[in-house]
Length: 172
Image 1 (cartoon, helix red, strand yellow):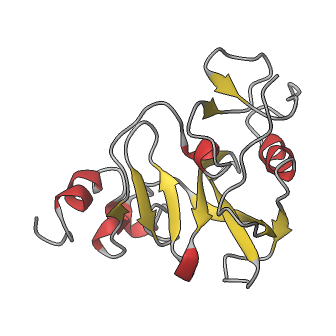
Image 2 (image 1 turned 180 degrees about the horizontal axis):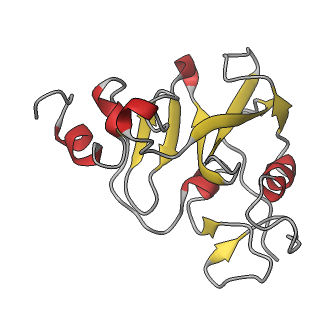
């Protein structure tokens, strides 16, 4: 395993070389039913993605215009429907839960994670496993030839409720 904490970190190192410095912890088995954007919304029954024309097997809570496709706007609008609002950073704030959107160099969202107790982040790696990680674990870094999900740039927060994640609105 060399530099890596365990076999899972070693396996993921090709896509996320930063795990050598910021290890991840596996929190579930692989499951292709949902993705990271659904996971931070609390929905593990369908994948979430903002398409102009609805795609079977995907959900998004707000309409998306042609101009918004492949931009940050539908993501910010979609998570606002769940009570999230923009915030400064990923620091722990008592009484709030936070999410972060990772974007590429063109400001296109590539990944989402949710902050858990103690400040660690949790997310879904595409159709692969759910993981607990630092913000840096999945980020792109110059010394790793820019592999990773991009940069953790857009932070949002909402007041905590009794359950750590709200059930998303119905998809009627």
